[in-house]
Image: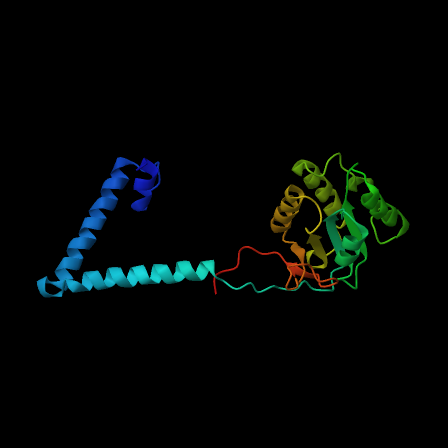
Length: 223
């Protein structure tokens, strides 16, 4: 057994001093002796009962935490400003924007990557006024977190007069690293983060036009 595992079993860290270890061991011995004193010779079965109860509680909570049912939280449709990585195609772009009826500005961070579908999206951005045209949205590579952070800071400066409740970060589009970066930026600045979740049929295929924006949260307490 490694030292860190042994110490963790006693509630200690790897850097615990010898004095701290001695104190914890003394406390454990004291607890055991006190339990013997309370139970007495004719009530030692209480110790086994307490161990069993503790074990059952642990099993219950462990099982429950692994089988929590997903309860999606819908994003408010009143959001006015949307921040995202440029979607890979027009259909995804339309699915994202369709969830909000009061959008005033959409900020899509993009790079030099080009293909037919991406170029179609970029052309749409050029034509419609709702999409931000600022140069700070263009980065060398969206797979570099520092580029996303720098662009995001410029976006927030552009939205300095906007209330945070009116801003939304959408992480459906973009590769994993870019989405994770945007998610952590949302946590850091207290901005809601959303992701599209679609319904699937019996053949495990996406049902068309079923995508709905849900809040992305990983810090809910178990209920």
